[in-house]
Every structure is written in C-alpha cells, then in structure tokens.
Length: 205
Image 1 (cartoon, one colour):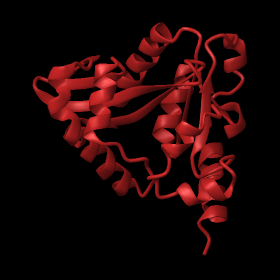
Image 2 (cartoon, one colour):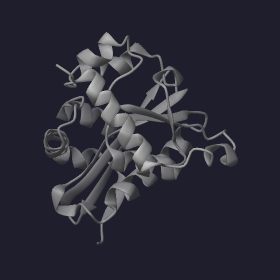
Image 3 (cartoon, one colour):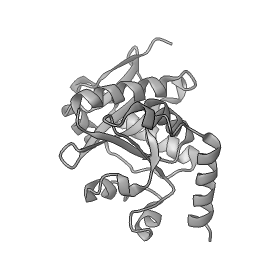
Image 4 (cartoon, one colour):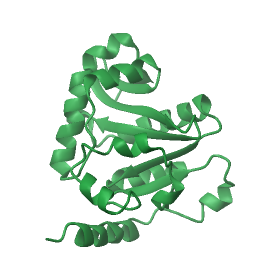
C-alpha cells in the first residue's frame, strides 16, 4: 500500500475535522476513554511542526502528533489513528516509528512516554523500546493530566490521585542502555491480565 507519511503543513488544515472525528469514532468503537481534541488544536500542532500525517494520494490515511512537557524533558505521542479504509496494513506502526524518530531529533534530551488502553499500541511501543511504568515515572505537569478531562475515565484517574487509571503508562528513555530495555519485552498475556484487573477494580458497580 503506497502511503506517504510526512510532517503536516498548513495545507493539511482541511483534514483536521476528519482526523478528530476518526479518533473519536475509533474510541467509541473500542469502548475506551479518550481525550477529545478540536480541529483548532490540530491546527496548532501543524503550525508547530508537531503533527505527522499519512496520505494516500489526497485522502487522509493516518495521523499522530507530538506534545512536550516540562520544557522538553518529556515528550508524548498522541492521537495516533489510522482511517478505517487503511487499517490492517501495518500503517499504525509506520506512523508511530516515523513520529518516534522525528521526536528524538526534535527533542534529543526528552524521555518519550505515553498512556494507552490499546494492546496494539502497547506492542508497537514495546518494539520501539518503551517499557510499562507507573504513572509516577511520567511527567507531573498538571497540563498533561488536564488533557484527560474529556476522557470517559477521568473520574477514575482523579479518584486515584492521578497515580492510576485504566491506561497503562509506557516510557522510553533514549539514554537507557539497550540491554536494560530488552529486559522488558512485550508480553500480551500479562498486559491483557493487567487491563482486566484494572477494569474489574475501577469499573465495578
């Protein structure tokens, strides 16, 4: 499948609403919480050269953007999405790999992290060198956690004093020796079990 993955420019503003709608529809389909974003927010990311878009000709195929925290000490990749017409071709991993390498160049001193409930994203992250970590190892910038307010699970996060939620925290420190990263290979069964335990604890009536 011939898809171009590039740093988004102003001419790509026209895809912003479709991007937001696709992210939200995917979250609803999976039954997971997600922090909503607006087209204006996507425009801002494009202006800052912190948005990556995948295009099949002139059609939107995928997207991801970068956020930085604590003056570039931490970097997160958010809004990773593939349009339904282009799924099951490995495009999500290609986009994630592109934004990962781009982040290391743009923020060479940053620790790269993310929070997610998706096992597919966890697998991609693990392949790139991320490892599961407690939220205490992530940024403590209030503005990051404020971004979770539109997530359906925000009350869970708040009730746990922002230390735990249905999401799993994952972190990649480019300065960490590779042999240390390899001690934490992706184990789908363990993470599936962890997700089930969290759901049983947090979603019980």
